[in-house]
Image (tube, rainbow, N blue to C red):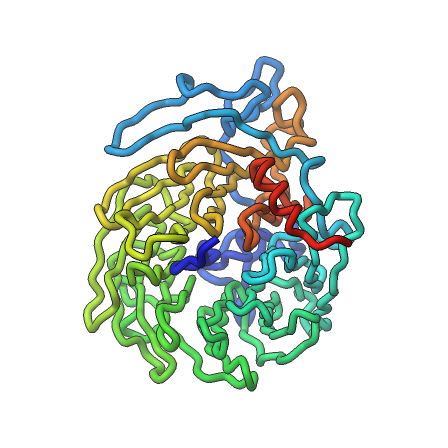
Length: 489
């Protein structure tokens, strides 16, 4: 499998992303962050509002993600026309059950974060709400009954009782892993679980971590609205970044950083709660340039090395594509979503270095995933099988498949045709005859993360109380080939 020129980065979602997943109000110096949602500090179920389904004749709420006991046919899908393929094309859908997956983290509390090592396809990291991260060695032929080895990365309790591990990120070389926690601490570890650096804390939970390509600098983003650049070799702080006056949102209100991504070894982009996107580098405190083309909070940001473009998604439902940064930021809009865009992902390129199309996937609270050809500035496919706000999307390393999640369901699509190939329902055990047992009840089974392994044969999902499930959506011949490559035990 060829290397991608545009690595698949796990996009973050909105400001106070971690608090929205865990039902918390993140506070700075005792003051609740503007726009934060959720309840107390107990790390319970998310309070995100679900779309209500029409009740069945017996009062139960039907299962409405397009996959009841009898699969939905193409003719039953609503059709709209927007110049692109719309709806769900169905071939033979494979249902992945809990029995078909490997469940990890049974001994841990709720797990929402997981990440495969980018180099070593059997190595998976998970993080939970009990201050523990784990590094697992998951053989390709592992089953739920297999004794899977793991190394515990224990985060020593701080003075704060809120010590959940809230972010993890492997270095591009796969030899280091960074973790962030609810108490604001950032730590760097080796793959053996040895602590290399403990970095001075933010004044709020760490919600995102990003390495540059050489892994000599790590960016951390916190609910305190700051981005800090760390020297990964020494553990020293290189620079702290706050959005300056010229980067503040419309109306002159102070703006908190909500996402970030590297665009080169020394430059990176930051987006904010007031609608701004700014370009920064390690040599300057303030932004090199900034723009406020979004009309509301910017939720996600992702750089494409192949086309040298930056994509941003916002509460306004727009996807903005920013040309290669210069003195003046220039952008164009991709419009079609009717609600907030919460996740973006560029399709990795495994072969042609100059493809005729450059594909970007966007996920939205309007329950849709859209595929855009950025070169032609058009929507080429709408994937609309979800009946709940889409939470996460992720391309496989080859770019051939796309996984999306909403309300504990994961759908895997053929990225070229839009055909559904696999479905996983994390709530299947809580349904009866295809219906939710407790109508309208909130659950803690939201998918917090989707991560493909380096081979593209397995996808790990972090599912809260349902732990981490390792799914294998490859075709049987592909699985057999990979198993034959595994060394004998």
